[in-house]
Image 1 (tube, rainbow, N blue to C red):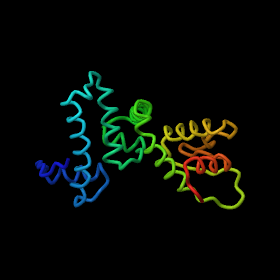
Image 2: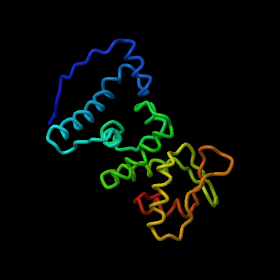
Image 3: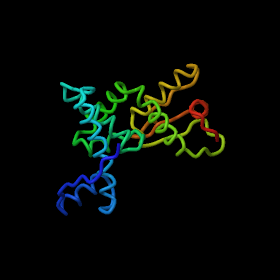
Length: 188
């Protein structure tokens, strides 16, 4: 079902603030907000028909993040700082929200998780005979998801681990990278 013609009064100042928060041009703001509206409408429809009635605030936030992943982020798992910007939370609160959302909706988010991992791993440009690759600025929850897959493959591969002396660097052994790509159906 398609719902059109939703009108909302947003001042020019608020438009500028929103565009900055969602990292887009003011001209693209209506497209971004339409995606948020789609997620919000789904939430209300599920509530009205009695499918999703929450009593705890954390359940509502997890469901909202799930809907935003599907509708707003187009099936890609956002990083903690993006979640913090949208939910007005600290980085550690966002990390916890993402972790609990991934756990609660793991089956429904399996494809978005895999797509996000493919996107992360595709940024790696292997050079020569390296024994491991370095990936940076990856949500720790996605590192955990990759390590979970690695352990499910056969358990013989080394896990992805934090790179010493960095805040956001992780080392992924070449063999682990190759197995993850193979498992996810990505050919080189």
